[in-house]
Every structure is written in structure tokens, then in C-alpha cells.
Length: 198
Image 1 (tube, rainbow, N blue to C red):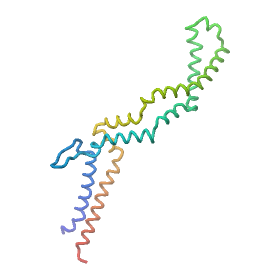
Image 2 (cartoon, rainbow, N blue to C red; image 1 turned 180 degrees about the vertical axis):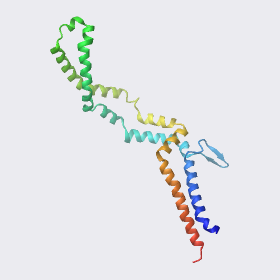
Image 3 (cartoon, rainbow, N blue to C red; image 1 turned 90 degrees about the vertical axis):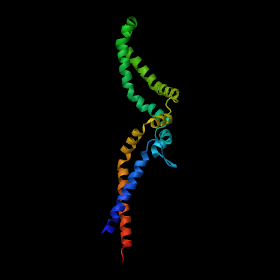
Image 4 (cartoon, rainbow, N blue to C red; image 1 turned 30 degrees about the vertical axis):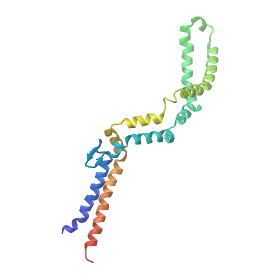
């Protein structure tokens, strides 16, 4: 009767070896010497290289500095903040200017305020993209996305890295474990059938 346990034993071995393999992606966190070999989880061992590759991928393919510049200097985006500028100018010309320069404000009426606003808004509309672009050029070195992502990921603790990757790939890891059990069962079944006389 014990011969019929072969598929179930093979299924357990298949599941267990895949479970161990997944655990060894993250553990042991620190290098451990076992005789002539040193064991360490793949991700803890390669965390720096992983961080560098991810940083390069983000900077080159996902979110380059040029992408950020184009988004921030997009004329449509700038037009969307013009009403805020107009409201601020209105408040400045009607409230703050009279308080700061009461004599000058006596010569500025509604018509003049309207004209000043129109001229300033038109000027700012063309000035904003240039200002933002100039600001971004000045901060380009500080906005080195590749370096920022690399440093952040390399600085993660091994626990944090495992938590992130488990959160992203837990279903896939579970599938690999189950697949190991299923394949083990099938192989055990084939072995059982091969041992039986026809």
C-alpha cells in the first residue's frame, strides 16, 4: 500500500522545494558560512544592484527629467493656474496696495485695475513657462531621479524589501509553491505507473 503514497510524497517534496526556494530569495539576510559555501538570500545579496537597475529604469523609461519638465511647463497646466494669479492680483491691487501706498491708490480706479491685471496676466502667461524651465534647469542635478531611487531602494532594510516584494508578488509566489506540488504529484504518479506491471 505504501507504494501508492509516492505521488503524495512527490507532491510534498515539489511544494516544499519551491517553498524553500522562495524563502531563499530573502533569507538568510546576512551571509552564513556552511562549510565551503556561503549562503545569503538573493535579494539581500543583490540589493545594491537591484536598486541601481531600478533607478536606471525609472530615470530612463518611466519618469525622466524631461518628462517632468514637459509636464510642468505645459501651457494648459499653466493656464489652469492663471485664475489663481488673477485673484491674487485683484486682492493685491484693491487691498494691499492701498494699505502700502495710499496716495498712489487714489489714482487707480476700477478701469486701471482691470488694465493692470490684463497686462500682468498676459505677461505672466508667457513668463511662467520660462521661469519654471529655468528653475528646473537649476535644480536638475538635485532632481537626479536615478540617484534618488537607487539610494532609497538601497537604503531599505531587508525586512522592508521583503515586505514590498511579497506585497507585489505574493500570489505569484503562492502559485509557484502550488505548481511545485502539482508537478511533484504528476511525477510521482508517472513513477507509480512505471513501477506497476502492465
